[in-house]
Image 1 (cartoon, rainbow, N blue to C red):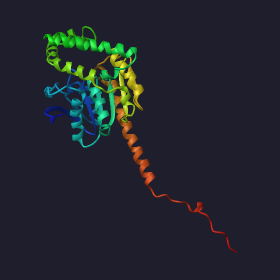
Image 2 (cartoon, helix red, strand yellow; image 1 turned 120 degrees about the vertical axis):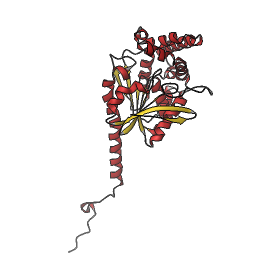
Image 3 (cartoon, rainbow, N blue to C red; image 1 turned 90 degrees about the vertical axis):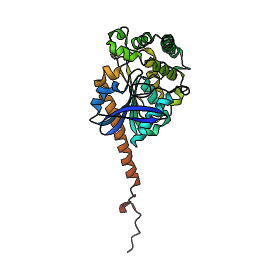
Length: 305
């Protein structure tokens, strides 16, 4: 495994790379880092060059410097710089906040990507301007964001992160964590509030996705919070040629709890795009071949006796 970094717009982004093959970039959720993907990366490394960056303010990547409003485009630019460094299109996998970033990158630079896999994407902005169910989902996640921000504003970082963790992984999940992990998570809470801001206020709507021409796989958990399940429901209907897979027994943290189950899905999705490209190239070669006309089909001169 190699750990290195790249500078993008004054932000130093750290990432790890392992394996060989077609590049696949893995984007983690809020509060975590590229290390979230350790088990899945170990499974994918035999077939792919796996690249897992730390998003802004997490792991070894610098914090947002505060120059203007933070938005999903900031993270998308970081990831696109990594993809550009590869000098070839990459497969992209994003979980939760990383899924929202992956969707943003796909909209901005679809030609830089071979495929996209969205695992419970936290693209809450897609719930705006929706029906009553969308409004209910949006109110639920907006209330969590407000609770977290209010706790941060008064200095209760631990309380803010407790509410965040218990919401996504179930009541009591925070108390079950070892104390060093709780301390590490609480130290990241300010970036959590920025992630909420970015995912709630992005202007992209479902109608902007109907022409997105990147093969997409969506993975959802049956026990996940209502907002992300609702987003997966909409994406499965809005994106062209999309595939949806739901694990009824899974929650929001599928990349950790169900990495053995999602590994073959992601691999098959990526392999399908490779096979699709091969068929297209073969068809192009066939069309480019000179057309040979059989002599038996040519008009025959009249017989002379």
